[in-house]
Image (tube, rainbow over all chains, first blue to last red):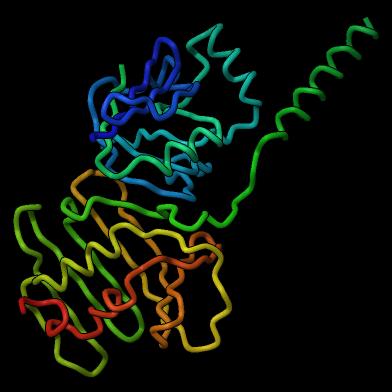
Length: 124
Length: 170
């Protein structure tokens, strides 16, 4: 059964499924206005944990890269608490990542343990 | 005004305190967790270098076999095309899985730099791998100074030491 992850940008929500059966759903925070998360169909091409961004020099553990330009699903490590980040995002699209799909630690860990290289990722 | 300033300060302090909650520092990845994973079929270049040996394998497209160059100190450089044994080695090192905390190793460990570039366009995978002299000891990895054990085929990771005899066509 093929594994797939759908990132819903409008709802800021992630759904992981295998062969039509939902494995996990969770909240996410995607790219901001200036760095929108690319939409389309992709595959996970790299997995790294632990991981530090080479570009931004910040942690991004449980990183599942799905684009050639470095966008990944990964754990959120920012200074603001998750609820505040989500609240900010619900008010303005200027709040968000540099294109990655941020997840809470438990969700990132669960998805990372389930996904494999080649798992389909659709961002819509 | 003063009460308002106090309330603002209190709110800011609460925010900073809240910000520091829920963040976890680096910890050893659980056993079975992928530490670094790349699709073996997309790899274009691989190097494994240590004081005792050098391996350089490359191909221009993913449809080709790898060209291999190996060398050891004071020996001739060997070149060959990749064989089944190289595929075994590549499959082993393209997905590195944690085996938990690194136990103390009493024997000699040879540290080798593993470098893998693939067709994804992402920066290469770079890892420092400790290969113990005794095959029964665990292989370890060092990421940013943090060391832990790897679940890695101990025979496969030693194939490059055999040169083209170990990696070329059988």
